[in-house]
Length: 129
Image 1: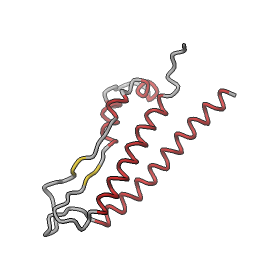
Image 2: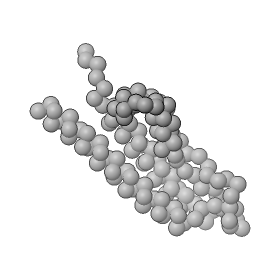
Image 3: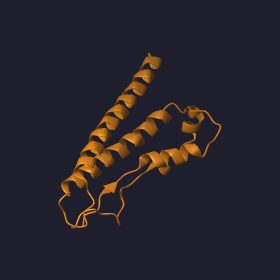
Image 4: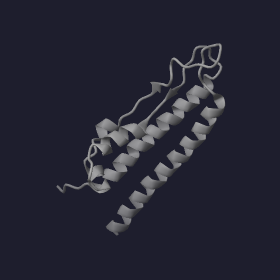
């Protein structure tokens, strides 16, 4: 059996795509609850988990950082964003315009991530040929 790190970038990109998908669902849920009294918006923050994981290895190349990333530490979940903040009388803190912009941005991010995964597999395929 061969030991290889050839899928490390793909694994990290896969975790990022999963987090992006979760964030899209969370934002869509925020939009659906924009008129629900007392609802607090939720969000997902994959970037800080990745930054923390990569930042623990200063003075290393990106390749060596990705090789040493613990994928289990890249699991993210939703959190309540600014739960004490609300500018509305009904205590709901969802701004529909902001959510729509965030949703569009996240859709672009997800598309870029899936394109990157496809490109990585294309590179592997060209090497195998």
